[in-house]
Length: 337
Image: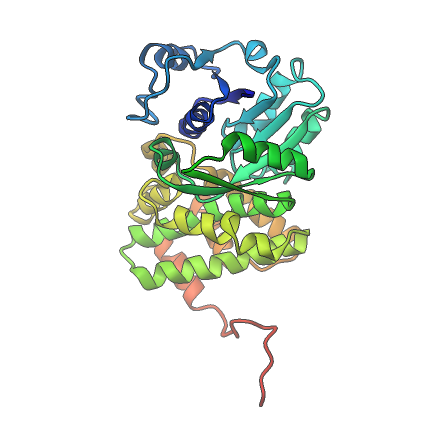
């Protein structure tokens, strides 16, 4: 049995806390919100963000960050990506060398263009950093629906340690050393999912969705490869797998926000309606900044930014994509004549 703290009591943090407890670990859940912790202590259920997932009576809940972090072997950092740096700063006085921090949110910091694990390594250099991502909606993980994810770390032993505490008969965990590829896949797919949602909101069909998913993974892979990630990662669970589920699932907040925008909502109106953090909105600007920095063409992500931040109608963005210059699908392939 390992001592584990889940830092962040949103839907994903709560779902993972249940997996960890079901595996026999001692689990403490931290939130900065007094009302949220009071609710969890009283009801053992997050009635707002993960209704129906009942948490065991011996799971601990606290607003005391020092108490949550101290003495734990694994710290699961589940705060939304926009709060990763501020939360890591708050954790700094309490973390100790040898603790493992697992980043399970997805995003790229807009100002620095750093991934979440890179932020943690800046703020908490004495810990071992890992990531975990893949096609995994909290609503299904919390209910025990069979799910597969990947644990990534530079050190094999760290990745395998994360694999050990999470893996069970309904939550299969693979390992990978390509942390950068995993984080880029997990972040960029949220932006593509906004585009897929916009297509749904406009009333387009399966052909359109398939095109967005397929061309989207091409854009993601081009950038990731240019930045030093491995193409195998983008063709696996944390690339195409995560992209498919986020573009298709009724649980996807990015898809839902995109649908609302496709129906005429502004970006702010869509985010207010979803009532949860829409990670793709925060990653969109960073994604296009990376594309320009590494000189990678990413037309879908370019158009998503224009819709989000320049009030371009989603229908016009689709037409721009359809009417781009003629191209060969794979430029590396050679013609015989």
